[in-house]
Length: 311
Length: 311
Image (cartoon, rainbow over all chains, first blue to last red; front, side, top):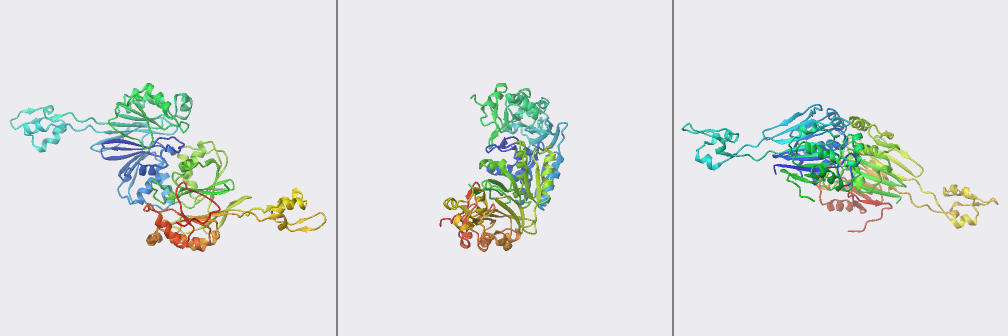
């Protein structure tokens, strides 16, 4: 599994007995990123058998409780389980005070380094990267400052054509530069083009997370051509007015964003507690963007995200 | 149902996938009291079909997260559901700041009056009472200040002997004083003793809640003769040393408290996450106090609590 998303909670502000508040795990190239952390996330991590100590980065889109009330419990549990390795939390500035006020009340002094990073709510920003992945935030529109996130693989190296490498007697120490696309100069001075030595790399995938936001087409440029996007659809089309008032999106608006951004697939979620049968929400989204699925607590989606069978 | 306890969570600091952190609902004489409010309590309320807006009093024993991290979510949900009636929270003083720091971050201004009452950690105190019930806190011993709670029915009125009332021609307006135990002076001046006009009342029941605490026999006087007591048993006997270090109790200590306090029944809970099979904990408690049961998430216990069948 090199890129998998697990939905831990796809409910909205008021959780129901079958939908937890927002939280997702993104497992990408052996890194485990937690995106939002609504109440009950640590229990959901256990139920879904996610190795929680593998989480090194937590992204909190905004400070509405259904997106972060589970954080302090998770941080405490990390501590109780003896964590010593550092953890990075990306969120609004005031989260730090919220967390430390609570830890202080229980006289908890974390055994591991906890680093808070303040999100930039005015423009796209690189949050962190390493040799295999990069993670960005980008602004969306809501009643309080909110960020979406883009989590993507860096372009994969070209694949070695073993036969050609042997035939041209390429020395081992040059393999890495060839994977990166360099040509090879043979001992006789002849230049062998990279295309004769390698195959195209496997595609690099990307995942966009957009919750909570009103309909905001500015998002499209940040998630353009994404392999898969989660976009909130708190309401069905019939409640467009309420969506506008509460600065949330409707199904068709989520689908429009997906279409305009030319993404590979769309997961809708963050459903209002009023919806028990979600089929109507799915149908509304599919009318505009066919390759939509419904988020469901406990669901796992592996990239590449293939076209879903027609219903 | 006039006195029923619902266990919403019986886990300890680190929740498991099958045990939520501490929370209980006490339904007594049509009042609904929430005792502790660990993370996930609002979801547990829904799963257990408790009408959450009936809660008017919340008691928080202490500020370790597994006893209150669910509170801010519940308070927010009350708000989102349009609550307007007042709510009383009894807890350590700093909880107020913890809650308001979080509400402020989401620009949430509660639509209902929220009253914080500071617990007294040095002596027993009446928290509130009305004509049918009374609720007390009492100090226990733990790594931070902690209170236990005693929730009890006031003595029930004597039951009217309808036949005697008719025979002695007691006027209606005197019925209430007779229920309270008064004699009746007939028109001819003859005094009819109350015992001829009434039957004994049904017994008044009481429930004691003791979590978290080290072995602390001082508790006994506060829960003496209680109908039912919940006492934490975080560890089995074999971990007495760890219990002492962490200021928790073992099974046999919980049972000793129950025995010394002469209570009617004992529920043990707040089990360490290390225990999956709880039978050994039950057996250890029963060796000292036979009428013990194991707390389990979702369990309901109605008072009177009868002797449990032998296993």
